[in-house]
Length: 154
Image (cartoon, rainbow, N blue to C red; front, top):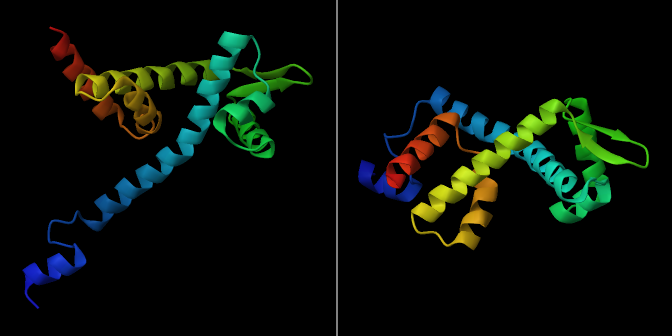
């Protein structure tokens, strides 16, 4: 079988990254998936605290589209990681670290939306797409996006 035929049938080519490089990339994606959950919860709790003055686990579950037990489990993780606290009958509160993370995630989200809109994506699609993309872009990529947008503003 010729190389061209093998590449066509398998989708593989000699251009594959080295194993350690590829393993690192996949590892980073797994880490980002795990962090995305925490980041979504922290951002939502911060939004609820700002807009409603309180964040209850039932509201978090409804807004994230998960079951109440799932929300409770994830909120427990936030507490273990020092991002949130709770008081009986008073809801969930963010620690200083939780507020800082929420602000960082919100800024990444806004940057991603701005970039998508700048390249012609409609606002509603940009908001929806940014919700996932914000968690996976590296700091290097985010800095490049910000630089690109700054040049566009001139």
